[in-house]
Structures are given as C-alpha cells and as structure tokens.
Length: 155
Image 1 (cartoon, rainbow, N blue to C red):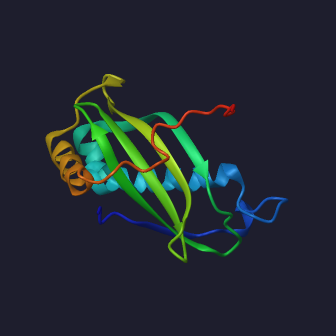
Image 2: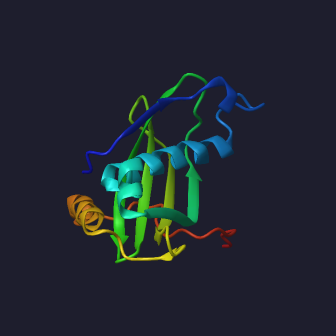
C-alpha cells in the first residue's frame, strides 16, 4: 500500500444545511490531497520550478459513501491505477476516524510543460516515483468504484 497520506478535519465552513460536509467540500478535500500527492511524487513547488512542469486534472468521478460531520478527522490515501508517459489514473479514498471509506475520487491527471503550455512526458524522477507508487498496489484488485458510470439501473 502507498505510504502517502493526507490528513485533515472537517472545518465548520465545509458543513452545509444538512449538517454534514457539503459535496463540493469533499471535492475540495480530494483536490488538496491530489496536490499533496503531486508534491509527494516530486512535483512540489521546487520540482515544478526545476522542471518547469505541472499537472492538470482532466476528469474526476466522486462517490459519496458516508456522511462526514464538523470536526471529524479524515485521511485520504492515493493509489496509482495506471500511468503512461504523460498521464496518471489516480484513485483516492477518504477514510473516516473509524477507518471506513467515506468517499472516493477517481481522476485522470495530465502532465504539462509550463513553457509550452502543452502535455509533455513526466520528468524522469517523477516518472520513477510514480512507477514505484504503482508497483506497490498493481497486484491488488481494482476498487469497486473504479470505472463507474452514472445512470439509472433498470430491471
């Protein structure tokens, strides 16, 4: 399993009129965790400057599984499901204090050359770090939320 972890508590301003964390705030938490993961693999502020390289989000899919309330601690883990020279297929799980999965986010990220403003291959160190993260979980079964589509199931 990845040793990456992003920890936080639900601030009061993230709680909506239903008394739990608003859906947009789950996505904010996942976005903050994604940024932390990108830092983790070598594209922190120093890496972005050194390589003149950054990451853009192309697509996301969020599943809301458990309510999170004000002050509740949570932990987000990240798993590289797949990658190529320029893209990362990333899966994030938000766990509550009891270790239950509260939400998931599946996303596709694209590496961007900041000078060109176009997709470009990952810097070698970043690619190596990503490959190492991928290999930690590549033999595990895919989470059931991966690849889901939205639609009404008919009998």
